Figure 1 (cartoon, helix red, strand yellow):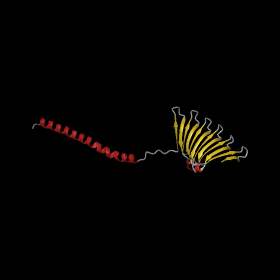
Figure 2 (cartoon, helix red, strand yellow):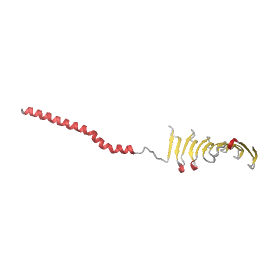
Figure 3 (tube, rainbow, N blue to C red):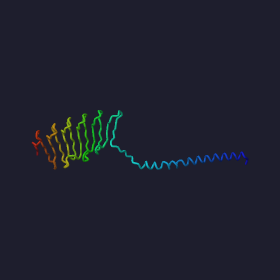
Figure 4 (cartoon, rainbow, N blue to C red):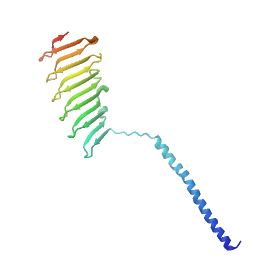
Length: 185
């Protein structure tokens, strides 16, 4: 072998060594990346996807509040807002864990209230424009249904109930004292 052949062979061998180093580097890259990302990937996989916040406001494109979700004083509630920014409907869990659904008029007065487990097993109250109850529909803890009509001062005037065994009952109340003036049967 002559010098030129030897130099050519060394040059080829040097290029081959460089390619092998480059190829070994590329082959080792996934292993190095796995070592670096492994702890982060495992930590991310075990971390909870939980978001904790005391309140959440949902706004429209104009930035106006359209809904809120919060737990003020430990009582969870979801409120929906009208175009005027006032509360219009609310779903809450009140005192004693009583769930309530309230529908409000444009003035913010509660007009319809639906709740379960408060004074009765289930009830619906409908109020007038001043927010005073005028009609009550409910089922008591004894499973007896009742309907009550109230005057403009929220005093009971007529009561109807179906007692145990299917016995109907009717009460009429005196306006000034609220005492029963008529009952049947």
